[in-house]
Amino acid sequence: MTGAKPPLVGAGATISKRDLLKAGGALTLAMLTGTARRAFAQQQWDVIVVGGGTAGMPTAIFAAERGARVLVVEKAPILGGTLDRSTGQIAAAGSVFQKEKGIKDSPDAHYEDIMRINGNTSDPALCRMLVDNAADTINWLAAHGFRALPEHPIKGGGHEPFTTERYLWGDGGGKAIFATMEPLFNKAVEAGQITVLTSTAVVDLVKSPAGAVLGVVCEDYDGKRLDLRARSTVLTSGGCAANPTMYHELHGTQLWTDMAYPFSQGDGINLGLSAGGYVRGGEHYAGLFNIVLKDKLVPSQPEGTLRTSPGRGRPIMEVFVNSRGERFVREDHPSIDHREKAVVKQPGQRFWAIFDEPILQVSPTIMRAFSREQMVEAFNNHPMFSKAKSLSELGVRAGVHPAALEQSLASYNQAIKKGAPDPLGRQERPMTISKPPFYAIRAQSWTIVSFAGLAVDGQLRVIKENGAAIPSLYAAGEVIGGGATTGNAYTNGMFVTPALTFGRLLGSKILPLA
Ligand SMILES: Cc1cc2nc3c(=O)[nH]c(=O)nc-3n(C[C@H](O)[C@H](O)[C@H](O)COP(=O)(O)OP(=O)(O)OC[C@H]3O[C@@H](n4cnc5c(N)ncnc54)[C@H](O)[C@@H]3O)c2cc1C
Image (cartoon, rainbow, N blue to C red; front, top):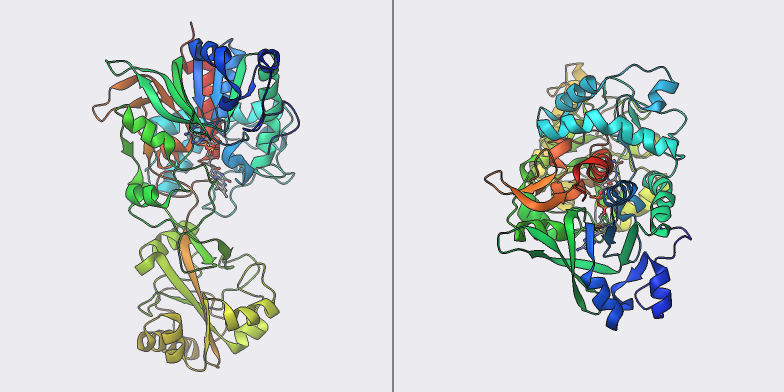
């Protein structure tokens, strides 16, 4: 993920005392021995940033720009966090990319769109702070070389669209954002403003008897620990979408997929709790519409997604049923949010796409990125693909109530033959599903992000349940729970945009400096 400069030295590296002094920012805890270690521990940093990812990098860059002495402690051997895999979709009203295309927009309109999409479930103060400052974030990236794709901004892609074109991403997704921030970060490292400890985890907070956060306890891969002190500590260590146990505890739902950044273990959530903070937002959990898993053991790697978006060139030919054999949603409902919310309510948050031989033969494959030959092969050996001579046998094989499946398909076919309206209001019904063999593909609601996280106030201070701020402890990014900003929906760009923006605000304004 990181480029050539500066080398973020791996845990096994050794350095001389002279090199250590010169290294400035490229350290691991294991490299600090003897007097160097003692000297390091005696430093009083202005800011310790816990996690050098999407939110941590701008926090450090902007604090350093204000003259702060910043220490970034990063558990992974490299910086960037989830930006290595994130699609990096961001949104703002007033970006240079809108201006280039003459698109008129306002933070108020952005705010209203967000709240319309998620049914007023974003935290109003944080959402307001986001819309008022997001354009400066994108314009900052643009000033340092970031470019949106030529056709962007757009209204929407895979999520519920905005009413205005304000949604964009760069070539390479999250990597394009990282590539823009990395040189700025490195410059501050070279100038001695930022010091980085990689392969080093923050495992505890140093607290005063009165409960103020005085710094962090770090640990390297060999278990060596060191206490470090700072005026302010910022938790930017990401969410818990790689920790199935914590994910289930905080959201009350399984973590179906194994796709988040592996270091998204919820460490920062535990750190905040240890200082008296509390968690909110699990009730905002939202699932994406469909994924076909490789395996029935979860979390599982994904096999791929089904092409189920109406109006995208492939008519929806299949019927979707739950494990009870019932249709549960208008398959071609124009709102992706509506379809997503419907599948989350089904047993096991899953459904089966049911079709027959003529559909397999004539239709573009429903499985994105699968050829017809791969589809045929999958029906012979994939645990999520079932094939049978009759619908009742298909039900038995797939795990769908056989008689109810037969009944659902009979009603669907009958309405088509009679020219009667579909009971669920479906418009696209190109053909009946009646000629064996019959096919079922099991698809799953899924996510890659945490909605629950530490409660913060309008200054991004971690707060207790009584609303009191924990002195000197701040948080940004997914550790505050995506639900705070995205609400109960996948609101375009509402994870990466707030991570970058709140990090920037912490570094540039909010964190107190001497
Ligand atoms: C595949 C995928 C696609 C996505 N696409 C989008 C999108 O298009 N738009 C959008 O808005 N959102 C998207 N998201 C979500 C978004 O990318 C993340 O919410 C966001 O990047 C998280 O930023 P962060 O700074 O909170 O965490 P991260 O970027 O993950 O950074 C956290 C850092 O903290 C480090 N860390 C963890 N624990 C410790 C510890 N104890 N001590 C020290 N360091 C620690 C980690 O190693 C990591 O480097 C996507 C997520 C995924 C997985």
